[in-house]
Picture 1 (cartoon, rainbow, N blue to C red):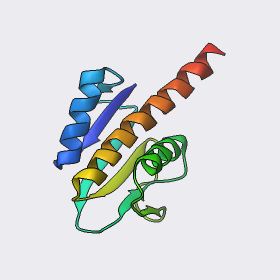
Picture 2: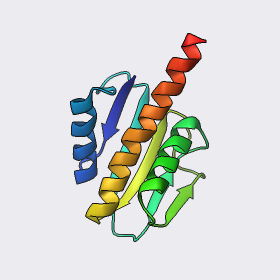
Picture 3: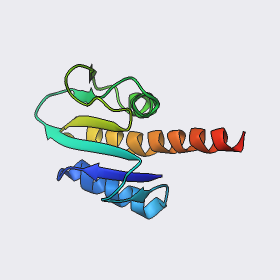
Length: 120
């Protein structure tokens, strides 16, 4: 699976490093299977901008397991693709860690589902 991480935030940098170190997916700049946009916010809650899809569900469930911070889901007017997700992350180290780790775990679950589909 090829993933492109957008953003200059600390979370984006940390996620790129995490994915590259663990060889779960290929972090690319061209022809990605999935795109993840990470942005810092001054809000107190995590915001997911996406549509209802496997990528959103797996990342959302993984983040929920790791933090008790409020999560808002925007579904209108923003991201309109099942291969993209935009996440606004509060400037709090514990929440940033939860989002980074949740994205990693969510991508792992998506990848496992794709592999099991092809194996029959």
